[in-house]
Image (cartoon, rainbow, N blue to C red; front, side, top):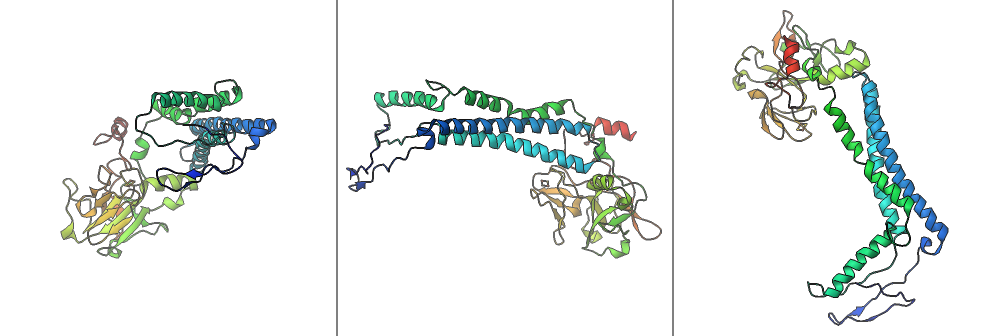
Length: 357
Ligand code: FES
């Protein structure tokens, strides 16, 4: 590889391999930072500022993560805001390093065109030595070594690179000693006698209104009376999908013989993969599809997983019909709703077991 001298005219000759004219190198236009010391210094400051921005983003992400500890778990708005700051901080940390590196390469590293002639696959010893020399030149070009050391750049880059992983690592390490009491996912507003109501208006549902093949998006009656924060967090756990099948199509699970009513079944809407709302029901196949990663559950067969990444069935809500003909829950779900996690016995977890006794 060689760096030819630039000329003010096109260098043209005949390509011996292909017989067409070699267009040569274009005119070289020096960058401002090559000819103006002030521009060079300015570009250096800009690169350092971008690396500094990256470091600042990491600090913001970590600060936001730790501020979660001071927030009431039911304060969904504050949690959203903190999550937004974690996202902004991580974004700045990554984009700062990326843009800084690009700006550095475009404005400060040596600017010359390189040509490389075709040759045998194995490079000659001379070429190999040239490659090593190129690497050394690269180090010098970067300003990290050689005569023109750019110590500010070097320091800011090392700082940004050194602390960037903390934005990801600190939350993981912090979580190791964190609150893993998953019982908050264990209990929902469902309980004996709580009526199943339409989402969102909260009107209780009569069994007679649920025709075969129909689907209802359901919340516990009274949910809408909660204050905004609790409404959001409780609704996120309690949402249910109510479906009526032909009783002949229903495979009743062992131990759940009285959990349905005349073909009407109710299952948690929270996907057991990573918690998206499962809401697409296909009447012909009785399949419920999660739109996030296509996990598919068979409502006729205990909402078992028939396709996709989910690993366990949707939790079933045991239902009955009260004296007025309204559908009611017999109890809360018998297992935590939502994504699977490692500490589940049945899996439930030790905390759940303790709490349920
Ligand atoms: S969240 Fe439902 S398939 Fe991933």
